[in-house]
Image 1 (cartoon, rainbow, N blue to C red):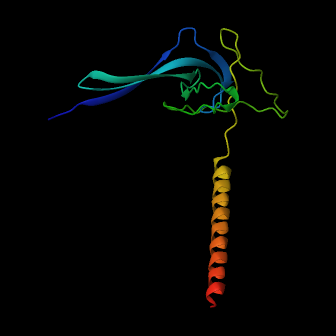
Image 2 (cartoon, helix red, strand yellow):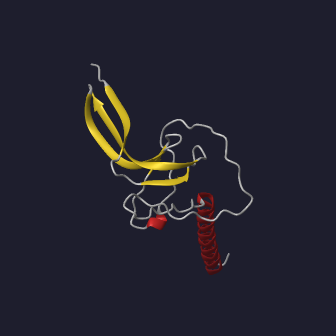
Image 3 (spheres, one colour):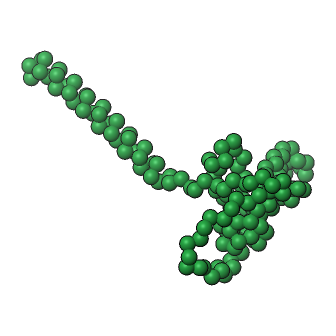
Length: 158
C-alpha cells in the first residue's frame, strides 16, 4: 500500500501588520522588517490534515524570516532566530569610529513601540555553574559518607 505524505510552509504578509527598521542578523543590512503569517501544513494524499500558523518578521532586504515570540514580559523576549530561506551576502556598510547610540524603539503602524529583544544568555556559563553545583553536592555527600564510615569503624574498634 502506498502512502503519500507532504508538508509545506508558506508566508503571507499580514495586512496592517507591524513594521520596524533594524539591522538584519542574516544579511547585516539595515532593513525594514514586515510582519508575516507563517503557515505550516501537513497532509496525506493531497489533502491537508493539520496546519499551524505563527507570526514572524521578514527582512525586506534578504527575505529571511525570523521567529516572533509574544510574551507578557517584553524584556524576556529572545532575539530573532533564522527560520528558513537562503541568505544573501552583501558588502557591509562603512562603519563609523564613534560609539553608536541605541536607536529609539521602532513603532508599529498603530504607534505602539516594539520592544527590543533581550541579549542572548550565556548558555555555556550557566551549564558550567550547574556542573559546579552538582560537583559540590557530590563532594558533600562523599564527605558525609566518609565521616559515617569512620564513626562505624571507631564503634567496631577497627
